[in-house]
Image 1 (tube, helix red, strand yellow):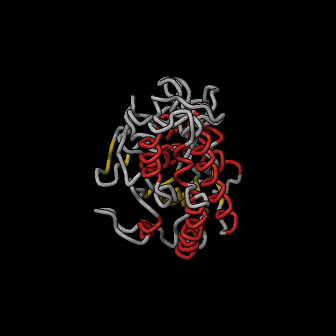
Image 2 (cartoon, rainbow, N blue to C red):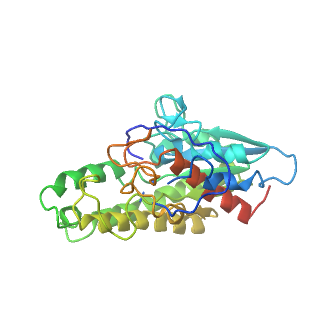
Image 3 (tube, helix red, strand yellow):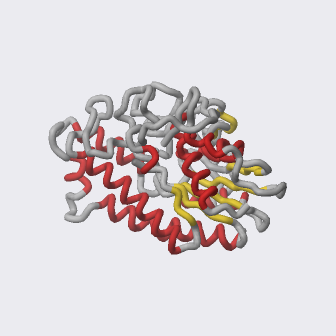
Length: 307
């Protein structure tokens, strides 16, 4: 979700997902004969009406480096979760304007060749997914800072001490300050598309949920792993609350990705580490991760189907 390194891999597989669990501000699906997202079989539509779907978001939505990249400016993949959701839902027409490096400001401001993302939302839009906020809290800067500080105290929590040196947790404050920005985005979406169903998509589990570490594969100090895990959870809690207060539904992608974080073996992880082994940006979902997030979105659509 950084301002941002770019990634890619293929993931358009269908079938019911093989059990595994899943992964902190990142997500995934099973490839070969199984995949979480594909288990829904187009059950979202009960008739032939076309559904106009707009996807807004940052690199966790766009899917950098995942094959096939269809927009170099935004590092957007045709196997990101909006594309997987659309392939599953009969009669859905997707306008995907997600873009790597996007913050809430890019909802109103062009980003290279990508127009302001909110321009894609029209009065006849039926469905909008929004995954934003990670770059507003400075996700890539946090990762770089914590990786650099780890060498000073590998068994301690140098990153946590750094962000709390003023006496208050600066990352917690930044998450709190991002809440009104996300709320403003949701209000704008509702104003432009008053009849649309709006889903706020959370971020997947990047680091082990049990607080364990995996240095040097992921170069954080031992006690900073739980601190950064909790920061990711705090971001998701904020998104959940903002969604509830602004007429939107929250899609949990953290829970479904626990156990597939960037510390896991290549065959099991849905989030790539800082040196990816699969086509994806560092600390971002690979193709399986995008498919898992699609599965979470589809599950939410099935739970409260309006189409």
